[in-house]
Image 1: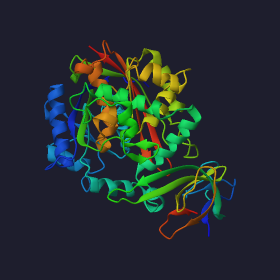
Image 2: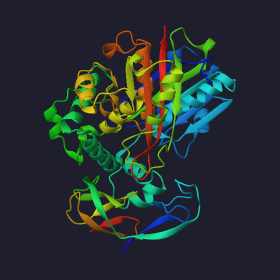
Image 3: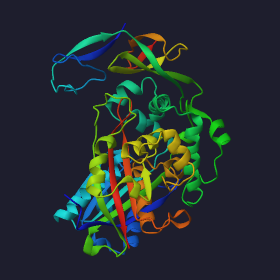
Image 4: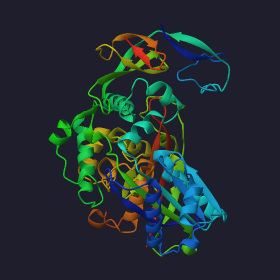
Length: 95
Length: 381
């Protein structure tokens, strides 16, 4: 139950989505690090085209330098702490 | 290197329309080309360079456009940079003409985007969007720019009324533009009561999707009509922050000093500004990065300069009122600025307009857009 982020083996910078080279030090060797939670910075509600179903999405600060976009499957507000998971679809979910 | 010997010899817009039937992107490019030749008074056989930008041209490419138009270009390019494509193509075309690879380059952009096409375009914009945002689902760029707007509201202490003022001012310009798709005056109540799209963004914070085309002609100085537009400076910087920031700045922030220095002008000299307006927050971000807001707060600039229209900004009504024709939106501000500098602004003409700055911004990645560029123009009578 977590999100797999990329960690630069040279300088430790974290990335999601994946990069080919580190944006900070240009190294190209990365490992995988598990990110399991974060704090909600902002929330919005999207009305899907052709559907009446609203979707809540949030901008999540998972680490100071790692912001993730997640679907929020419960009503939550900025400042709240959420656990994070990644679905098979690729979507990150906060709950 | 300056831009001598190459000028903008013409600029046109094929009027934007909402959901037209019986039309194709290729046909819009053809209309744009014909109008551009008319505008510059050149025959098609003088065109030896072609640049094209479109999201909906596939499976065709620029060369297929050349074939349909009956052109044999010595220089050809296709641009994929959306809201930054117009100035990017201009940058390349100017150098091609200066260096002699071409003498007259037609820069064309068009899109005919249906609602069904739009969803597909948004969800397959690039692999990051396809793999990580579309599955959320994310609601297209509206969702991303809701977050950028919220961050700007917090940092600049802005509220809904500030964004309303910006949108209302652009609508006031649009009431003077017969080709804008939204022309009726917008009130604060209209703005605040509009259906939510991705709060705080409502309907009037999002550019209406339209079909249309824009075109610019770049030629050697000798081929251009007496009334032409000269490039004083052009700068670009893409992926400037490696997508590690909050999206509140653009690459323009890093290039503004060099832009003004090489233009030999400053923001105070500008008679108008056309900045890429996919969302009101990005209008403010670009004006700030370009130095037009200066020492004022964003809030004060909105109240004193934008709402009063004392600083003419997005005088066509911008995409927020005139419409967003896909990749042609990347040329909309450029075409408007050229029209103003050639005294062809009609009822919305800025008196004695001589200098304009135009900026491009586009190509969403994970949280905001990557591309930015700007050009300083001078009208020559």
